[in-house]
Image 1 (tube, one colour):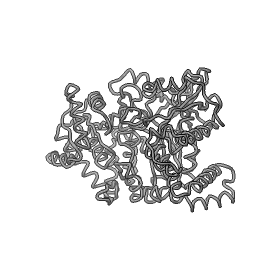
Image 2: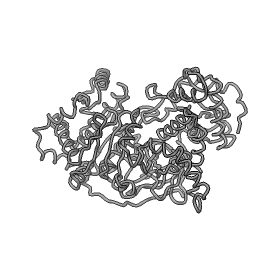
Image 3: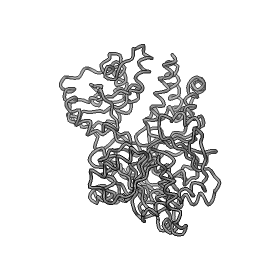
Length: 607
């Protein structure tokens, strides 16, 4: 199959905007809890009415400050309660929020604020305010930019006070004038190469996609006590979609600004569905394994994990798991698995993964825990999910079928094309890039994949990242990187070998995992730099690579590797804020290391 469409399940009036989703909740369920904010370690509930009142107050303040219809307002902050209020307030004022990652440099801020002509900005901290000030100073003053408010200095209270003289009628006129066709936000791509492009997403993208997702995945939102905890960066499209989605569904939302608090917040908030990227699910698994190792129970953990994955695989077979496997799984659950469920808050039922392929191993592991694993696929330009697995129709290893109102097509060269209500309208101030991104109404995603007979999509890699060896073999890096990164010691890895005679890999170590791993293996503490040359560390990395190589052909196998002294991070420019490796930057800066790696013939690989 090379094309699959799903018809719309829900339609919306052309005059509908994101603001109407919040108004509808406050009208139908005024006393229902909608957002919970952690204050002094206790979750405080805000009803739909309270949320709408705060949103209206902040929106009036923006209007009083001179923010006009269609004006762009930047938000630079971690994920927190105030961001969601600001998003809806800016929409309520008829304006357009522009997210900026809190880790952005002055140069990056200047580009986004300047290219989008932001008239105002709300930042989280005084340090962020200084970054914006530096961006102004170094870039001609950013002439369109006016007020900059700081959340930590009471930005919301300041705006509410400033807007007290703005009438309800004037505010209503603002949000009533906005409809499906109007721009809701401009989200700048992470920019793995070149300057980030601003994707213009409309109110229709959010409203129609959210309403159709809620209809098609109603089990997730209708589950008794349904609630979720948002910890992904709200500057990323996935989190922004979730923010609007839960308001549209009337499902309580909590925020975790610092992922270091995630486990504790999971325990107190107790979400029923978890939305995250694969790296977080990977870290949950690795942390559980290392904790078991510290307690001398690593063999039990690995046995339980093996049983758990086998049990999940058997669920897809005729007749399901046998009596013996069910009994073993029950034992594994009692010894290990229930403890991992407790880490996730104890009442999680659904795990929704996006942003990158989750992989079959993790998919089966978390399904074996008792979670319904719903893997999805999308990009900034598709308002996050254009396809997702549905409860009752899960195929581990695929990202499900298109959402209602969306279509997927596989081009002759394997590229995934998308069409429908999720697809953005174009790039801001960049008609050339917009024209290049579309052909015959189909958006070119740049990803490569395939559709099965049921219309389920499997992602096999990025089109531009396909490695073509000197022997002419096409190799998708993800099929090597994803399984190799499963090792608890490995933070990031990058398969290389374009126009080379064999595949190699650059590997970085996880500094957080290293101390416990060393202790669990009877080793004295050492630095990351020392660990890169440690024989036992290298032996275990080789063992992981051998396991990866068993899954691919000889021509695709990893023949050599090098462990780098430095990790790939957002701060050093080797990771995007959405945790994707900037492949071109790594290849450029480590060119000599790569050349040295290929200077000698590869050793024979095992497996």
